[in-house]
Image (cartoon, rainbow, N blue to C red; front, side):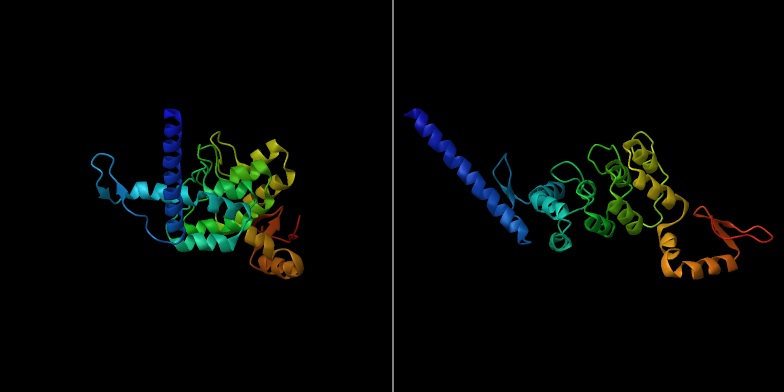
Length: 235
């Protein structure tokens, strides 16, 4: 009899806790502030410290944020941004940062938006300090993500160490057997991605002529001053 009463009491307590958590989550998703927390010592009702509130927000939005990233859904990302309560540069309750999850799921569109939300793509993003986005994009061979990083964060040094062992992204791609990723990274290291794009396609001949007229020669995707005398453009 006593065991039945104890079990019923535990079940009622668990139900009450679940209902309380659901109410907090609904409040957060509605963009409203959570209610004050009760002090464990005197039972008084007080607002949570800022850092505790931020942790609460991150934890209660992790599931939705993870879904949005996994599906590369910009509309869902905009909904979360509109709440104005998430710091996208902080780790999720799962451990890794949103940037890592974006690379892992090959969510290039979401990844490209993160710098505008205050995320530094050169910072460690796995929650353990192992590497940054370039490291994981090279490690997994994510070509779409590599292009998104190069476009979203112009001037990023793709030759700089990207992991805790001091390796460059191209070396990581080589180690993992991702030849296309390594080639892209080495090309980007020699020539900015935007200039590569301008030199492709129907406009390539006109662009090359303009570059040569300016006294610059392009050889092996590297831009160098043209020496005196006749010099052919191209490799």
